[in-house]
Length: 200
Image 1: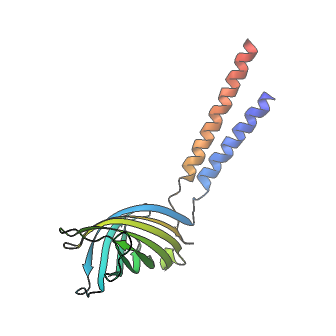
Image 2: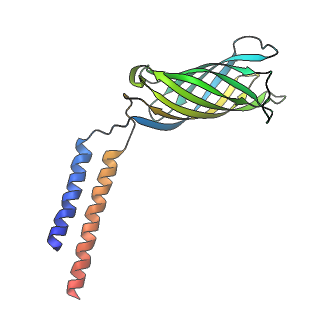
């Protein structure tokens, strides 16, 4: 019985190792957080009811460098209960190989201080893409700081993206190697325990 158990655990460990080295890790859904810096540029003088802007920023992410270009507007005529103004627009994010994904965003921006500093919160809806992002869907959230005078922006964007051509950096081979090592260690422990019981 002991010999059979050792063979079973060794077989499972070997199978896990073989799968880990031969299978290519692929995931269709990628979730990641990125940080970036950008410039928000008004596209024209504000009217009493609206401020149009163009946001361009660069991000680092687990799938490579990303660049965002967003066109939007802040509604100055509407004030939310918390004192913020609603904003909305469209965005396109370009990946490291020129593939893009795009969609819409909406959220709110706080009233700026005398020095021009403000914070904003946005929700993103991904509606499509090109290249490896073809057929992309998903969503995201963004929290950032903006100076409306200088245009300096610091942003934290979290995205969940599903696209058939996206391969996420999934550490499956390493995980399976760890599993195989754990099973081998467990088998060794059982063998030593059984041996010490037989000697007693």
